[in-house]
Length: 83
Image (cartoon, rainbow, N blue to C red):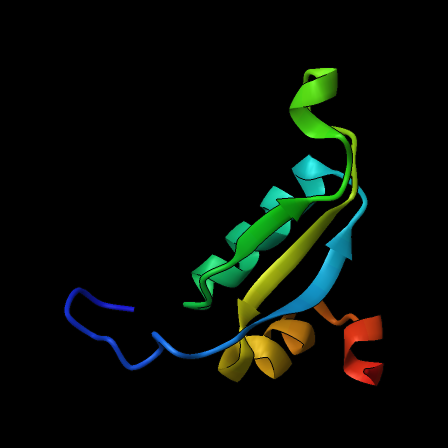
């Protein structure tokens, strides 16, 4: 989204993949970013309570309009598609 472009403000974020750990999640975020897709990561472990999210599973979220393309790029099928 460019500065001043508010076309996606009301668009829903949807999960597109679950990475086994933070390094893989960051790798996937970079891959999608190269294709112009902005990604939000959410760590699924206890996090700061146990010092780091490094080894915990991470869910990748993108705008709903980018979800199909993101899944194609990552070549993943998710439970979210079945809901």
